[in-house]
Image: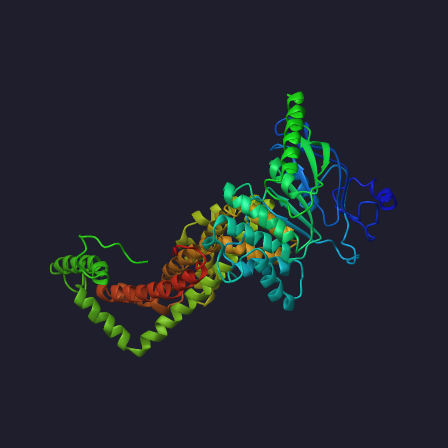
Length: 285
Length: 264
């Protein structure tokens, strides 16, 4: 681990560093994402000052794990995902993404499920998936199989030729998940993907996501403000506070899958985390 | 979708829909005819005189050469205007520097009198094919550019960001993300460009080249034959409306098939 970090840590330019060697094994499995003392500032409007969005963030996501970042809105969670996705620059520290073992040398594939489906409404469901496959240079002869497999996985088999606006919000978000999984990502970033759905649909989607993940097994970094969602889905939870955004706690959720929504261990964990959250937030206020 | 039946609609659907239009048209024709009774037919022709003249025009094979010449000029001017206008509008919308540079130039071009371009192009290009096309392009492309530029302001940045996250290259983002969002603006530009092009083509022909429908208009104008001028003008207008209905609307309907409610 320290071997590659040593030559990366000095870099403070805005490039996402891609490890040249396959991730090294350690006690808890190989790392998929390593973030080391990441800092990000935005210029404040008006004054010449800068506003610190992310302060000294360090975290590690292991391959095949589901890791959540929980924090209040405006704490910079989405900015963190955007930095990892490579669409936002940063001011200090390193972000390292390791290609999946067995795929060394290849650029790691990153998929992103946003708060809104962000589908191209003028393309069919199938066309939306083709768009990302073409963007990622996946050979055309694989497209048919990838579309069929992933639509089937999210429960939308047979909707290939339908247009997104004919689908409900929940179904559109399923298409977005199928689109993300279709590129067979090393890393799947999810930014509050269920927050715009009604409570019942969201619950069903969470359940189905767990089911899907027993089949496709990407590494997931999931951002949410909903602790019960995080506790139900995650292997690890990072808790973030605001102003500046910093991580104040890392929790492991050692409950085997499949999990039940009314699992008492999960419920107790959630309760204690909520208590802790408020004590930190109130201490600041 | 079946229409909800109401008591106020005793007529079968299709007749009920067509009838108001037919009545309006009939009323217009009656008023037109009534006014025409006070004038000489060559000064203010009635509808039946106009129809007669139009039939005369369309039964003369030589007329098709004349119409063909004008259509070719309109088509060339229209296509070039659309290409330049779309490219410039897109460039202005996507690149801040280009936007600042052309912002006032577009206004200058839009406000420059059309008639000046018509005269200038005759002086510069003489009685060539270039003159009317040059006139059309200089007048029409700023409208197209302006319209497409306005369209770029409505682009959803979130979708562009989605494309970038999935590492789509610029060409793929342009084709699948940007252009489809501009399609409503492109269609309105097409229609503005076509209607402007044909009007300007006739002016340019009347002043310059001495052929095409414009030449026919100036010829009959010098003969003070309003009936013939109207016959040429109206028959040509019908062709342009047909192009709009058959080509643009059909194309628009197919393009926007993804919308739950088709709006053209």
